Amino acid sequence: MPGSALISDWVDLQPLNTLALPARARYFAKIETVEQLRECLLWAQRQHVPLLVLGGGSNVILAADWPGLALHIAIKGKRIQPIVGGAEVSVGAGENWHELVQWSLAQELYGLENLTLIPGTAGAAPIQNIGAYGVEVGERLLRVRGVDLGIDLEHDFSVREISVAECELGYRDSIFKNALRNRFVITEIVLRLSEQFKPVLSYPTLREALTTIEKPTALNVEKAVRKIRQSRLPDPIALPNAGSFFKNPVITREHFARLQNNHSAIPHFLTADSYVKIPAAWLVEQSGWKGRRVGAVGVHEKQALVLIHYPGHRFDTPPAQALLDLAATIQRDVLAQFAIALELEPTVYGSH
Ligand code: FAD
Ligand code: NAP
Image (cartoon, rainbow, N blue to C red; front, side):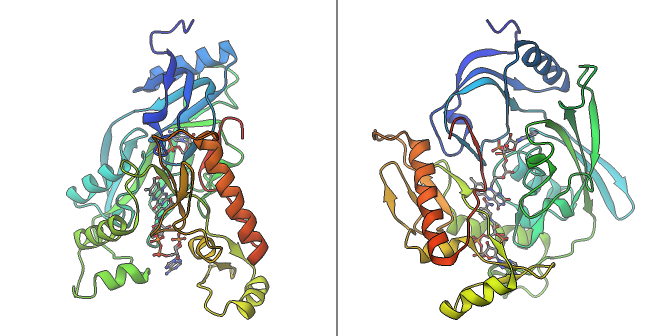
């Protein structure tokens, strides 16, 4: 028995994950306020059930029914606090990220335009330090607010603040995927946006899309990124996916030099700390998997980093298992050919 008006029994999570994987939550609550969050956390603690925090479900693989309480974070609200040169913008964790980017541009506040059309919620953005076209959210983040389940000895689940430095943001990484994994529920993020637009055009595809415009505005950049993304990435509503399935591997210069002997055309980017980043999409393509389908799952024909679930057909292997099997086969092939261990980008929940 749930025993809280907020909590429902056995809720279907298929509409709440962009891979459209069939999974249910034993208990489920939609969280619209910090008070509701506290009530549910207290309930989960008393019942000794595990928590699953969900935003837009665009970076998770739900491998099985969730045996505990799934919290769908839907806390809304945006506040602007003017500061010299721009504004501090506080955003409820449940706000839609793409709508936030559009809204910021309408306020003439700049810095998020390269991050347009990324699915999901504002609260999830720091979890993997979302990034695209040369910008990461960490470059615009000041702090996050939320509830730390690990140090809450008083069980009052009060909101605390973590500065951007304490978030330990890295390449698609943060403290929330490491020391604070499954331990911190973000309720609000605070960004610093600028009243002056400074274009970031380091990515060749973006620069090329803007060559005809002498002095691109923020709206030009946002539109160009949106167009490129729409032309290359499958819409999860039509073709369920979780974006990039693997992180781009970062290898040593020595390893790279060895690979270049056999693969002279290998694309690569030097990182600030002198390692070499290899596009995982290229590795998957070289291993022969681009555009291939295995039962209910496959690799997208235009973007080899995106694995697709084709719902609506029955196969012996459940789709989440088929997806993880396909990922493991790709990882094995890339490892054999390039001695590179690809890491999954989305987080897997449920037995694996
Ligand atoms: P969810 O999938 O719901 O959750 C992801 C993780 O964050 C889970 O571990 C969850 O427990 C945790 N989490 C969610 N909300 C909270 C919260 N409030 N507090 C604590 N933990 C929380 N990513 C990029 O970086 N760049 C891209 O360009 C990009 N493009 C994409 C394109 C497509 C088509 C798709 C499907 C995905 C793409 N992604 C991209 C991945 C994804 O959109 C981002 O990682 C996004 O931030 C996930 O947000 P979400 O709300 O859907 O998170
Ligand atoms: P792309 O422009 O074809 O580039 C291929 C890869 O090369 C990308 O992975 C990118 O790394 C890297 N790259 C390109 N130019 C670079 C530069 N100047 N400096 C450093 N690295 C460079 O990539 P795409 O696949 O179409 O994606 C475009 C952008 O959207 C990328 O930033 C990508 O991360 C992002 N995206 C992310 C997801 C996701 O789910 N995480 C999904 C779709 C798109 P980075 O990936 O490190 O940027």
